[in-house]
Image (cartoon, rainbow, N blue to C red; front, side, top):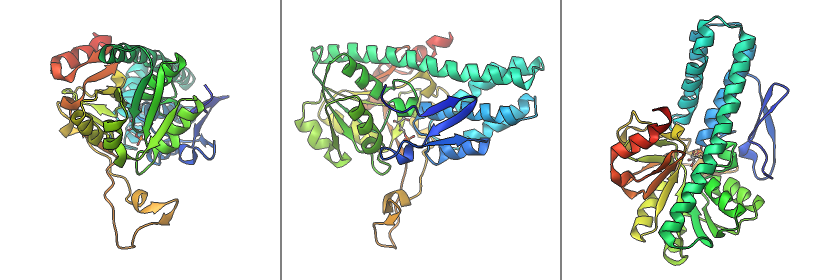
Length: 355
Ligand code: MRU
């Protein structure tokens, strides 16, 4: 893949690609402490639900390397601190909780920090390798579904929002992973990428990934969604997720629910592609999901310069909740879930791996 790795581990050091500088610059920042890790996640050096989770695991590696403590309680405390960096993507808490569970026995047995560190490094690497395999499965399921829905086997015209590719996952990716896999097999005609105001993950990151993959793509503003869905023969829409509740309600980048509502109007199938680590089975509906509010300067300013009248303030929710009723299918590594089939199907498929 011709796209820079969002996380680089070299001679025990952890570097994060500063996604704020893309596509102009491919700049790496070294992570030297737990505080650095928290800041990288909070300030969007790294972003995208799976990548936030993996970055936190490598943040714990950095912490453990410098820590003198061999107590599980201290490990948990450090993990709890990282969980506060961003509230909406459940992958952050998921990966940290999984690592606590994975290390508890070694802590109980009084293993040295050296042993704990090597276990944690293997765990973090293993989690990323698992997502890579799972992304491939999701892409295959999405392809089968596309064939069933459209009756064709290539020439797909797709639309996506935000960035869900290599930069958001450190692996093939979820929704954009479907797109890159179809591109590898020459089955795509064209992709429409929403710019994703105000942070421009679509314009800066998705378009950059599509360009590097030589995908025929057009960038659109979110205001053009109805125009494009009405006139551009879109076969399907694929997006990612930050948290999926039991009834299929899905939190994802702001603008996703508008897209799903308009897609229903034009009868275009709308899919969420996400690993089981993005599911939150403790939440019965999306009403319980905390939505991150970001600074309004992301709307009122452009490259540090005020664009509005000085007295104007903005409202900047970073995510919204798409109701499960608007989602044709949620594609995860365990299969395709149709929220219209009810809560039990979602629970069963999501829990398949741990039954
Ligand atoms: O604010 P971001 O850039 O972290 O938001 C990212 C998204 O909303 C993605 O769609 C989601 O995390 C899925 S990434 C595979």
